[in-house]
Each structure stands twice: as structure tokens, then as C-alpha cells.
Image 1 (cartoon, rainbow, N blue to C red):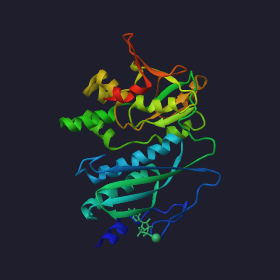
Image 2 (image 1 turned 45 degrees about the horizontal axis):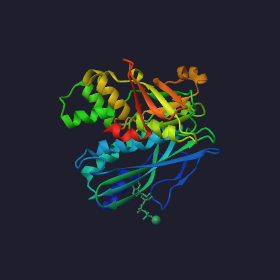
Image 3 (image 1 turned 135 degrees about the vertical axis):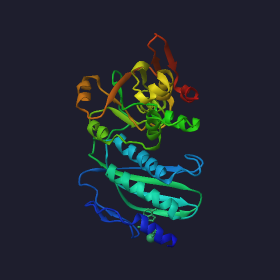
Image 4 (image 1 turned 30 degrees about the vertical axis):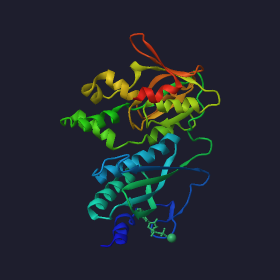
Length: 317
Ligand code: ADP
Ligand code: MG
């Protein structure tokens, strides 16, 4: 099979969907945006040597690429529709394309998103996925909109991905906990349902890709009047696997400044607190938005650590 046949073979057969008038194979795809809705668009890239080590399992790359990209749709409260895929490959081999395309198709089906086109070029290994989703006008969750007094909430548990990466570096012997943490690193689970349930309700929202401190700072900086935040560190949600493998002190560090959890961080007017009980995703209130700039970490022993706005990178190191 030649290079073009390989690519056609692995990517051209996509499930038929009403919103795709013309899919892979022509110069463009022709797509029907749901009537009356806005299109949400985002692109994510993975570059060998920068985002992953040479020799990484292509199936792992597929699930990370798509999970991270679709997480941006979740963070806006959008529903996934389509994605396009740009592949730069040193060579188009079946050994790489087969597991990559198979896992990509599995994850796309699970996430409810359809591949509608792409580009394939020769060069150092790099992958980009551009995702498209739909959201009702006025309902999208943006980073701007938090107000003093709003609750700061997060979905799921934090820090697992950084912990999983650490176990990979350490070659930690396998166990149920280690497998869980590594899965959290490899395979992002976009919080699509939570994002959609929060659309029009949360005052601000984003997905956590740099640790809570760095990403929360984006929310604090997105308003005209810079805001602050108090975080009750004791409230940071840690997984049982994290507690078992690393304990809560290391867990809190990773929750605050660890890697790519792809959980949602959102703010909610305190009067809307009851809404949290209607969510079908686990959510934890971890703090409160303040009028005073800076992030203040409240520890259970009474210690209060102030993280100045300039200190996020320093803190992460
Ligand atoms: P053109 O030269 O007109 O841009 P290409 O030969 O690059 O067209 O692509 C032919 C068709 O295959 C297009 O529909 C394109 O979207 C699709 N395609 C190319 N590469 C990929 C890929 N990696 N994944 C999905 N579709 C792809
Ligand atoms: Mg063309």
C-alpha cells in the first residue's frame, strides 16, 4: 500500500452523521452547523520531543490528542461535532497508523465527535487536532465573569496526571493505584456533561491544564478588575490512588501546580450553590473569589500562604 492509500484506508471510513453533508475525500468537508447555535473551535498539538518522548505508543498519542482537544469544548459548555487532523509523520507505516487510527476512532466514538478531514505531510512527528462544537448563543462558559463571593469549584480529582507521570519516570512497580494514575495521565476524560450542565449557570469556567493555581489565575485575570482567590487546601479533591501512593502533602502540591488533569475549574454565584447537587459529575467547592488580588492558600494548621500573581511559575517549580 502506498502512502496515500494508507491514509485513505485508515481515515476515510467515518461513521455517517446528519451534520456532515460531505466528509473526507474532497477538497473541503461540507458541514451543517446546528441552526441557531454558535460554533466553538479550538486546536491542540502534540510534538515529539516537546510533548512526548520518541517511541511513545501511537494509541496513547491518539487518546491524549483527542482528549485534550475535546476538553476545550467541555470547558466552554459546547457539544462536540467534528474534528480535523493534521499529521506530520517521518514515514507513513502501517505499524504506526493502524494503532493510532484504531484508538482515535474508538475515542472519537466515545466522545461523540467525527473526523471530517485533515492533512498529512512528511516531517518530524507532530499531530494537531482541531475540534468543532456547538453552543447556544449567550450560554458558552468563558474565563471572564467571576465575581467576589463566587464559589470556586472543580470537577473530579486533581493532581492525578502529574502523579501518573512521576510513576512513569520512577518506573514504579505496577499496582491498581499506579495503573489508575497512569491512565489519568495518558487518557484525558473531557468533562463534557458537566460543562453542558453548567452552561448559562457558572460565572466563569476553564479546563485545568497547568495545575489549579495557574489556571485559576487565568480566571482572576480575565475580568476588568483583577480578582483574588482563597483556596482551602484541605478541600482539594485527591483520588484514593493519590493518597495511597503519594499521601496528601505531595497530592496537594500536584493538585495546585501539577500537570494536565483536564478537570473543569468554574466559579458559581453563592446563591446558585444548590445547582451543584443537580450535576451528575463529582464537584468540590475548594474556595472563594475575593475582591483583593492574589491567591491565598489556607492550610488546616492555620498557615496562610500568599501566592502573588507573579509567583505562579516560581511556585510551580
Ligand atoms: P488537498 O491536497 O486538496 O488538500 P489532500 O490530498 O491533502 O487534499 O487530502 C485529501 C482528503 O483527505 C481531504 O478530504 C482531506 O481532508 C483528507 N485527509 C488528508 N489527511 C488526512 C488525515 N490525516 N486525517 C483525515 N483526513 C485526511
Ligand atoms: Mg484540494
